Length: 109
Image 1 (tube, rainbow, N blue to C red):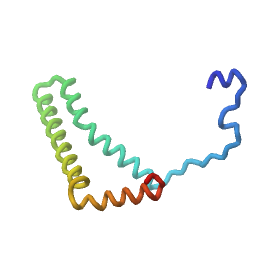
Image 2 (cartoon, rainbow, N blue to C red):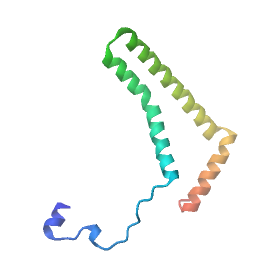
Image 3 (cartoon, one colour):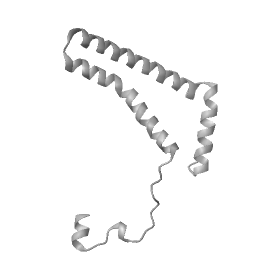
Image 4 (cartoon, one colour):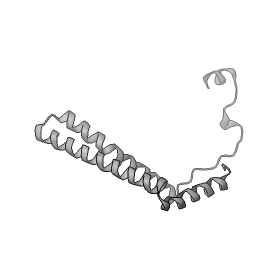
């Protein structure tokens, strides 16, 4: 980019290429909210354990470590159950057929 500027090449925005404006819809907003909520849920045990290590208070540190370990075990159980439901069970067949149909609509299959 710097060498292009020094040599006099025009930037991509100066080529009169039409760009689609960014559109904020309720669906996209909800998808990003769900994304950040799930990220927060999966990062919660780490932050609880980190807080337990930093605080060094006897009872609070022990309770935070216990809550962190319990929450991690709960997340693992839910993850394994969802994996079983989607991949190994008969009910997951609908998910896979939807995914294959969606990929074929977009041109990947």
